[in-house]
Length: 343
Image 1: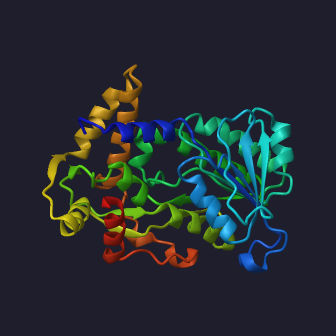
Image 2: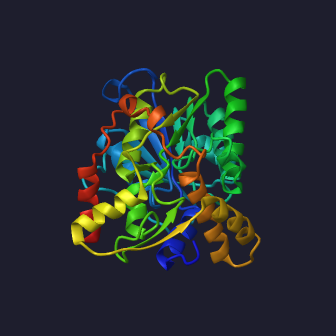
């Protein structure tokens, strides 16, 4: 991980700086399917990031009444999909105003946060406190990535705010019987990260192979994450105070390269690195005053959590796909996706 492509740095910089989403959903009967739920109301905060649109699309496809909450003065505008005007409302909120957040969440039963890493615990704590005051029933925090419940992952500094959020939610759920949480994990973003060249670079035919490139890891497309969120909302009793794992497929970097070779026949340039060494370098880069170095350190910690032995990057033995209504992907499906990206 010596040279990171500029578009990867740009992507992760925006991700770390918090292109954010939170969604909230009002349910009267927490155990019934969405199509029989009365007065379902969802509030989605900051639906202008990379994951947000996929979640918003899934919510609207499930016919959830959705209010998008945007930060006061935000330059990012929410795009309202054609035909969904009757389901979607946009409302500005002030994250620093407890009363304003409580007012926005008064009719809400479920909050789902996909906030970025920047100030994550501070912002989510405000949302959790407001949710409790507003009598929200379920809070789904910003996980949607590596398994931060894994003891080794929990030692990596990148996940500190996620862990603080988990612990705060556990405390509040124990104190308030009507309040609960669900942690959602998808490990890597298959379509998104293939497009920016993080797993393997399909356009340059190059790859950094972590721990040899034959490590199976869970990979998930953005639309699947959206469907998983809907699945959690449709199964609130089964997912109450649970850690929920899902993916499209468990695959290796070398398998992705083999698929690409079958499509265009080109040779690849690869560099094998140890995730243990990547982690060590990431701690050093974290001390830098150079923003690019800090972003690179985040990439290193993510790589360690995704591919490192014992870090739990393969969810195959603990999937909730069936519960969430997810069909997953075959190798043929992955080949189709790779073909679309290569063009």
